[in-house]
Image (tube, rainbow, N blue to C red; front, side, top):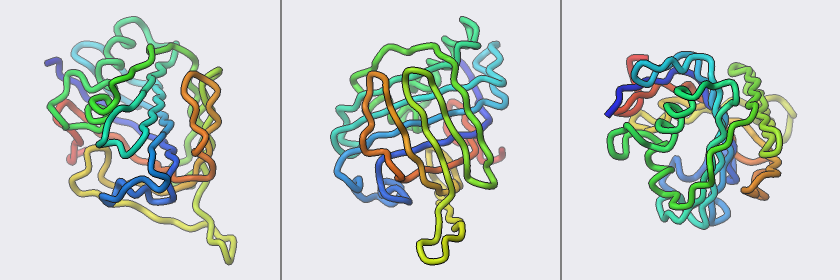
Length: 212
C-alpha cells in the first residue's frame, strides 16, 4: 500500500433535505441517493507524487441508500494534473491504497459497482468557507451552486453544523443549500435546493486525521 495524505476542502450537494438523513442513520429523504462533490487539495501527496493545488470532482447515484449498493459513480480530475498525479488521485478517490472502510471514498467506491470512465476536464471551484457559498463547475458534466441556509421567517442567514466525532469523511461540516445541474452521463434531477455541506478534508490511508 502506498502512503498518502490529503488536506483541503470539500463541497458536496446531495438530493436529501438539509442535514442529510444518512448522517443520522436514517434512510434517504426520497428513498434514493445522488450527489455531486468538488474537492480542493491544498496540500497532499501519494508516495513521491505531490498533489498540492489540484482539484477533483465526483458524481454518485444509488437507487436506494448508499449502504444498499448498486451505485454508479464517475470521477473528474482537473486536466492540469500530470500523468502521475492523475493516477495517484484516481487511486485515492476510488478507495485504493486505503484500509478497509477507512474513508468515504472507500465506502462509496465499494457501493458503486458501476464506474464510468474517469475523465479529465477543467474543474473550477470557488469557495468561501465562512460564508457557506461556492460553485463547482465542470464543463459538459455538472455545475453546482452553494448558498447558506436561510431563516424562512426573517430571511436572515442561518448557521448549522454537523459534528461527527467518528465520521469517515469529516469531523465537523457546515450545512448549506445546493443545486446541481448535471449535463453529463449521470443525471441528478433531485439536487435542487437540497442538502449541501462544506468541510475540511484531512485524510490518509487509515482515515480522518484528527491531529490536522
